[in-house]
Length: 107
Image (tube, rainbow, N blue to C red; front, side, top):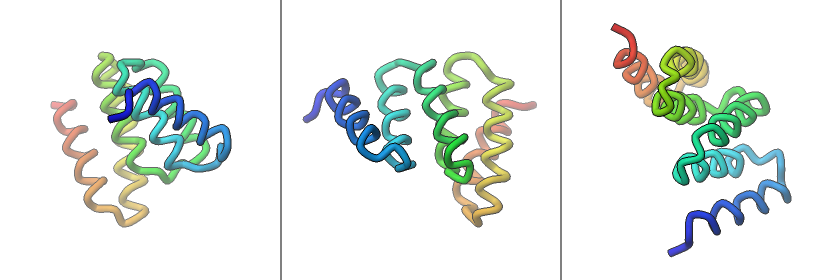
């Protein structure tokens, strides 16, 4: 099993080699989150979404990370944008997950 820090280093090298790859950028953000680096993870998700605004999964995971850090208003905004993005793409599963997360945040 690969050490999470080593996995992050590998992903960052891959990202350096191919900075336009959205999947690698998503992996970096996910690893940062797993390692407890919430602020860095949020920044990585936000950069990914600036570069690839149609990457629906990033809205969900960024929203989750924002929630975990107590930033519920920002999380709700992220979920709303993610729902709209997923719906435009026809990804009803992702839209449903984010709508459920949004509903859990808002009374």
